[in-house]
Image (tube, rainbow, N blue to C red; front, side):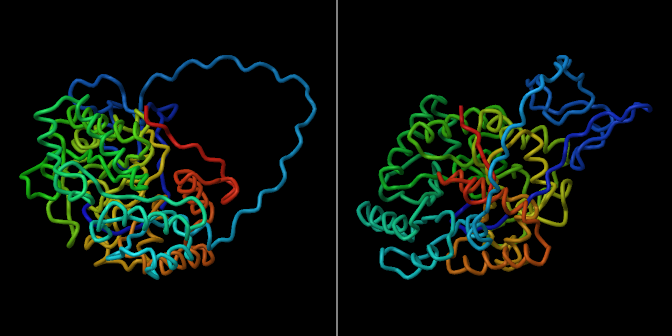
Length: 420
C-alpha cells in the first residue's frame, strides 16, 4: 500500500479431492481448468513440492484408530459469553489519524471510544521522535488495552520516518547489491528503530514481483521479478523485523506485477492468466506463508481470471486462494480509502463487503470514519447480511494479533502463525 486507508470478509474454498467412481477431479473455483483436469501443481521454476491445494495427490496412509477406553465424561466448560457486538465489530478496524500530531487531538478519543484494534501512523503524524512517542503513549492510554500501532516503513520510497531514520535504498537495489543476510540486518535495524518509537506493526515487506519501471505503483518497491529471489529477500526483511519484535505484514496478495492503473486513484486491473498468476506472482507469498508469516495484506487490484467483479480485498475468491495455500493468520485489506475501492463503495459498505469476503481487518486512512465502519458491521450482523460467526473469527484473530484475549472477546481460542 502507499499512504492509505482500510476494509475486510470470509469465504475460503476447501481444496478439492478426486471424486470416486468415474475418476473425474475438481479443484478450488479459482484453480485453472488445466490443473483441475490433470492434478498438476503449478510452482515457480525449480520448485518441486506440490501446492497444498493440488488435486490427484496420493493420500498419506492413516494409522489405525485405537478403540476408545471407557472413561468418565469430561466436565463441560462453562458457557462463554462474548463481548458486546459493538466491541467485537470495533476490533476489526485499523484506521489512520490524518494530520494528527498532538496527544490532545480529539480524534484520539474518538477512535478509542469506537474500540479499534489499531491505528496507522503516516508522515503527517511525525514531527520528531519525542513527539511520536508522546502520541503513541497517548493512543495506548486512551485505548485502555491492547492496541496495534502500525506504519508503512518500506525500503525505498514508501516511508513514514524517512526524515528521522535516514536514507534506505529501494528493495530492488537491495536485492541487486546486498545479500539476504544483510537485508535481514537492515530489517532488524528498522525494527529496532520502530519499536523504540512504540510501533509494533510494519506494513512491509512487499512480496509483489517487479513488473516495471521505478515510477510504477510497485516497480522498485519489489525485490525482484524472479519469484525465488523476491521470496528470499522479502523473507529476510520480514525476519529482521521479527527479530526486533515488530510484526511484518506481507503485501499485496495475490501479487500485482501485471496490474495496469494506479489503485490509489482508481481501478487497477491484472489480466494475468490464472495458471501464470499461481506459478509466478503467488509463489513468494506461498513461501512466506510456509515460513509462518502472521499477517498478509490483500491488494486492491481486480484480477480478471480470479474475480472480475471485485478487487482482491473485496473478493471471496482471493481470500479463498490465500487460505488454500495454507495461510492461517490475519488477512487485512489495503486501504478502503483508495480510489479502487472508495469510488465504488463507501466506508461502511466496503467494510461489510471485505469482512464478508474473508478479511479479518479493514484498513482505512481516516479515523473519523471508524464509527461509521463499526456501525455498518453491527447493522450487517443484526440484519443477517453478515454472519456473526465470520465476525467473531475476524475479531478473535485481530485481538490475538494485538496481544489481547480472543477467548474473552469472541469465545474463540486463537493461535496465529509464528514466523520461523
